[in-house]
Every structure is written in structure tokens, then in C-alpha cells.
Amino acid sequence: MLVPLYRVAHARSGDKGDGSNVGLIADTPEIYALILEQVTAERVKEHFREICKGDVERFEVPNLNALNFILHDSLGGGGTESLKTDAQGKTHGQGLLTLEIEVPANLLKPAN
Image 1: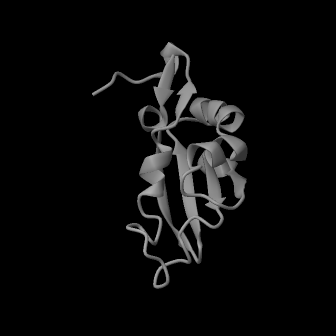
Image 2: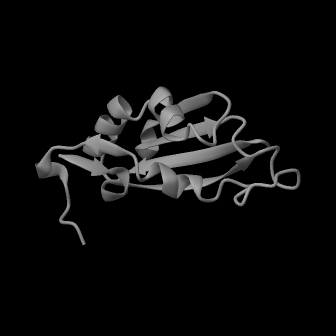
Image 3: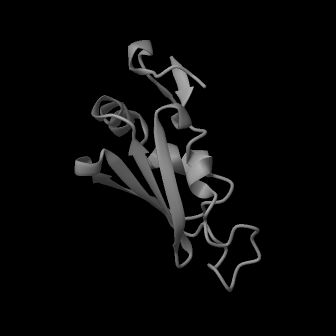
């Protein structure tokens, strides 16, 4: 089934200068394996194409079933320099959770 990441993961985000830092944490090790395959740096770059003008780096954190992404050049100069509504990237985690991935139905919890 094609589902948004918010069905199978949660996220936190913030700023790193002019880059946004987005942590994506899978609900289970099985979901983490799917996220490893499907949520690539290239796919995240495409998902944030309107705001991320630089590269996207992906870091794996397997002991936490997590990935960390740095979206370079995504904050319009960062905190005090930016005219963006979200100059510190606080909404980028929620934005990433709208990305859809393929998940077998047996791994999904019932939708609320």
C-alpha cells in the first residue's frame, strides 16, 4: 500500500545555519528497512524542490531506526537573515512526513 510517512514514522526538524536538519524515526525495525530503501537523499531533494536549493545529505542511525537529512540552502540564509516564514526549518519534519512510501498492509497499524 502507498501511505504517507506519518502512518509509519515520526520526525523532528530544526536549523543548522542555512540548512534544515530533519530526523525521520521509523515506528519499527521492519518499517526502518523500508524507509532505508525508499527515502533516499534524491527523493527527499525532489520532495523539497521548492525550498531546498542545495544538496541533501542522508545519514543512517540504525540503532534508533532513524535517518537524518541535511537540506542545504533551504532556509534563505538562516534564522536572523531569512525572510522565510519558517526560517528555522521547524515545519520541515512535518513536510517530510507527507512523502508516500510502499508498505505491506501487514506492517500498518490501523489508521486513527
